[in-house]
Image (cartoon, rainbow, N blue to C red; front, side):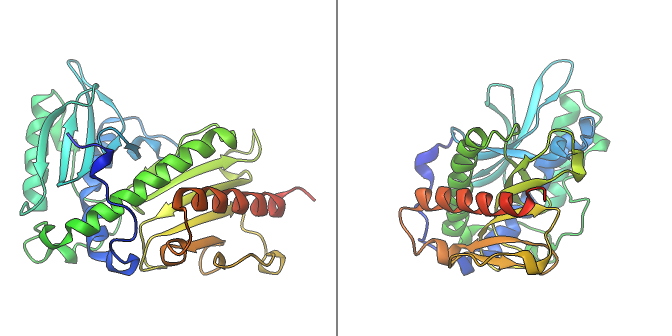
Length: 286
């Protein structure tokens, strides 16, 4: 079992060199979320497919699925990369090291294990229901992490730090929710509603960390308002944070800029607090 001490400090791998590890991990996290997708009642906010960071396990852990004989959770471990099924106490019931494993074999083995736990295994798939690039696996769809260990541990450190700060903000901002990882985008985020009865359309602010995507080829920290305010109302912000306005609107701090400032945890906390304050002002009723 892993623990927090296995995480490397941030900056050992350049933020722009994490792309391959991120793509591999994003494929590997899909079956973790899909356990909830297959066997839990769908939630309006998709929390049934979400994950949280478990600091003791040093892993991303999915939602609990209850059978007639056991409570199950799926998890993505980072050191070494593996997908696992856990009991309610966090003990590993089944573990599939990913190095050299094909996506199809992972799916077959997990289905067999789920069948043994009394679940209808044909409901479960290890693949994403959303479009996701599998080319990083090669023609055989085989996981290859051998050259990516440092990058994988670097990404684990981003999740660990983000989880710690977002957990703090859950209380200080009275969010009324907990932060989650969302499998499709692989981001860790905390949504804070600004009105009690607004529902999904109500005013809100989301604080989060993306490990990288089509917008930025590196991890980045973001703060997004809803609804998006008009571009001409966005105030000038203090660098290195900047406004992102392509397809979505939000304040962004890239990992490259973030790593130039110490101490890291305090820097992140201050950035998210300031971003929240700016966005709350923008969303204030006229």
